[in-house]
Length: 151
Image (cartoon, rainbow, N blue to C red; front, top):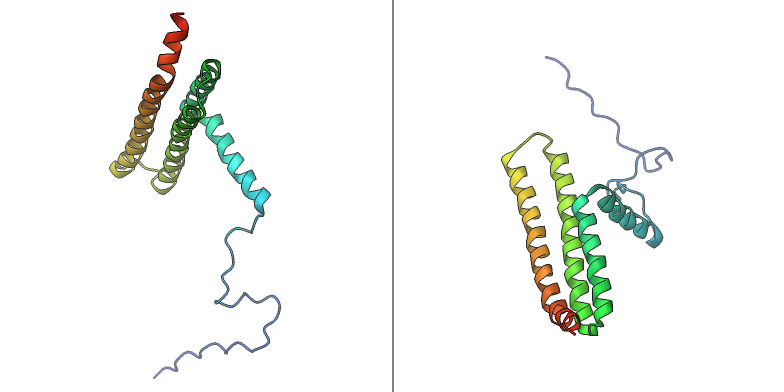
């Protein structure tokens, strides 16, 4: 008969300083960052979005034109709020689409039908938001623009 392996010795109550932390206090994956650091990450993400995504730049350019037109037409505060929400929805969805595409590419570097479905659905949601925002813009800006252009 062979001898059973000897179990390792139990840890002592006074662990040396280089030993790992007890299991009850998990080590954070990322170091903690303050409020300023959190804003830095957010701005880095927004910067990445506009540097790398042509459609986000197009949406932003259209948003600037819409805001200039709204200022020229002197729309009401409520109309401003609606326009800003519509613009924000499109840009937020464009960012979520980009984030999901990156996550899918990381999880499934090879072509997979489910990865395509996830990417197509988020792209479709951006399209729906963009169409709805265009309709909102036409409903708010169209009548005063026509009135101003027709004298």
